[in-house]
Length: 170
Image 1 (cartoon, rainbow, N blue to C red):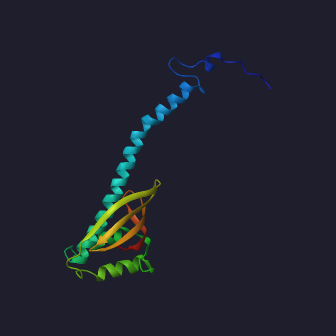
Image 2: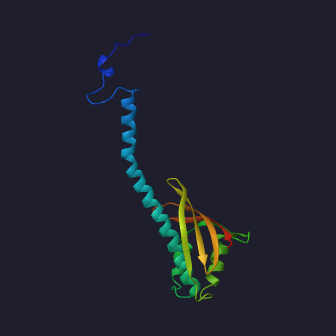
Image 3: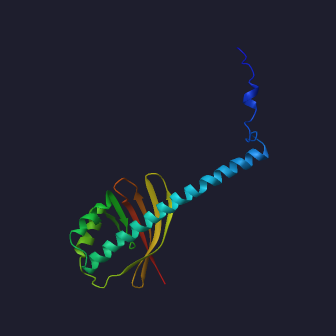
């Protein structure tokens, strides 16, 4: 085994750079992490706003569909927002496939002329580069549902993979 020559220059910190393991180095590392925090916070805020906008947009389409004010052609965009394997755990306990959900929604066109849907408290629970899990409340008249949605992130926009709804009382 050949010993390497000691490089004293490598042990010498550059001007203004604290030596590793010192309180000054720890403080410099913390400062660098804080400098990156606004960028991460801004990206998270943008992502959260995008999720909120998607949940609201999706329910605006449903509201217009139920009220009969949406053009019938808008159903295609609604359907395309649901991934092929989409499932809905309905508040009554039924587990519905994409085809079942789309059939129920399509058949409900214009059946609730006064339909109003309010979305509240959209919160991102967790996110990865390809998935987002969010929760929100959906209110129609005095009836509320708490929902958890799993969205797939993609270049064409978010696609709904799974939705679980639970009735809210009071």
